[in-house]
Length: 355
Image 1 (cartoon, one colour):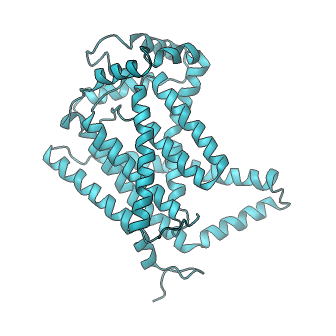
Image 2: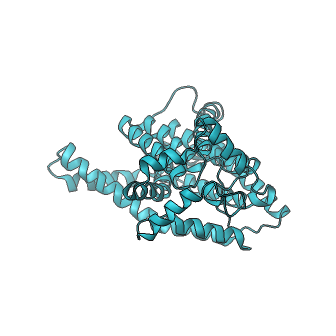
Image 3: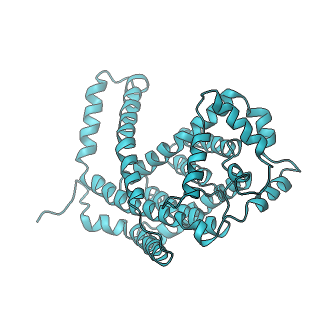
């Protein structure tokens, strides 16, 4: 039987070995998620799988359109290729002919899907394992670190206008699509690329350590839920500003914030509330690091996006500033830890193989 191979002679065995580290990590992750869910009586809800399928069906066509359109612009205005459509067609055919790249991408997509389901399952357990109890401490830490100010106060003075709040709301809404886009792109880089595997392993570490372990140990809900938790009126002014902005009919986070609180308050299998650390900032920082390894321009753009996420997370009341600081530190640490793991156990050696 002919093995799965292309011009480079790469076979199925090579692909499985390349993904062994990632697969073992996610398998252990899934076992822990299943075990804890059984112990605490939280079922593996089909809602999570359904949400991932909806995201896939919704986002993947958008991602493909964006990539094709962007490449067409490059061919037209940067490379100035006379037959740009013919060149684009040739590139698509060449990509689809790289069987080991497609197979490696498919393997990675399956592994990362299991990882995302495991993450969501463990996140649902946070209020059960450790009810929200760190909000006051993080509020006080914010005030101490910022010389007596709560970070949202100067941010409101600078970015509290209609267009600024709308801008950061839009940035926040783009995050999920962008995260899936970068993850899918990483999956379909060439399987011999070390930076590809380093990103995927770092992604798992960041979400497992930051989004599950640390989020459970330092369980908090964020400024938006400070009042509903009965902790005081410290953030009432910020919430009133966001509600006034929403009342204008603008793009708003208020409806989403109210929806998440209803899910938390009801007996459902969904909990999407967790403030420390900020996984929006953590994942954006990780994407920026990864982007720098691919392109300086992409790295600059993603760094600006990460900074915008940091500002938006505080301005929109999702997070305390310390949530974002911790998220960035965790992402950087996980990137370097992933590099060590991939070089030692991923079969790449010390040298860096390019995408």
